[in-house]
Each structure stands twice: as structure tokens, then as C-alpha cells.
Image (cartoon, rainbow, N blue to C red; front, side, top):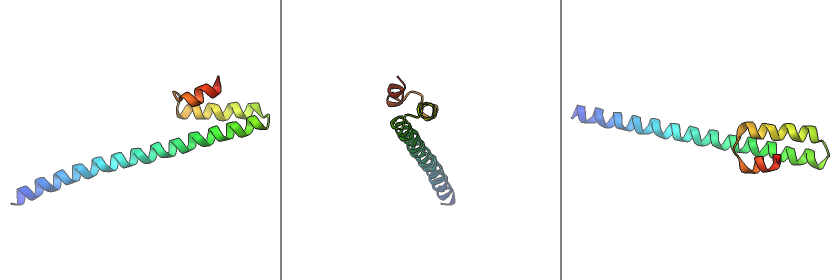
Length: 77
């Protein structure tokens, strides 16, 4: 009886640990997406105000976050 309870608790702990890792990854992905979008928004702002140096800098930051993003690569040219 006690050994069954220990096995069940162990399985629950493993499951909980995996769930926490998944949740942590989802939070990181969400923050990364928001940060990348912020850099793209700033890029557009600077382009509209003819500040090309800063626009290039913000676009480079977006590329650092997600180098294979097609939107960012397209914007870079």
C-alpha cells in the first residue's frame, strides 16, 4: 500500500515538473514574441520619422531575437 502511494506520488511529481517546464517555455516564448514585435513597431516608427539609423538598430535587435523570422528578414531586405 505504501509503495503504491510512493509510486503514485513520484509519477505526480514527474508530471508536475514537466508541466512547469512547458509553462515556463510558453511564458518565455510569449515574452520573446512581445519584445520582437516591440522592436518591429519601433522600426516602423523610426522609418516614418526618417531616422534610418535607429530603424536599422531596432530591426537588428528583432533579428537577434528571431533570426529566421520571415517578416523581419523581409523588412531588412
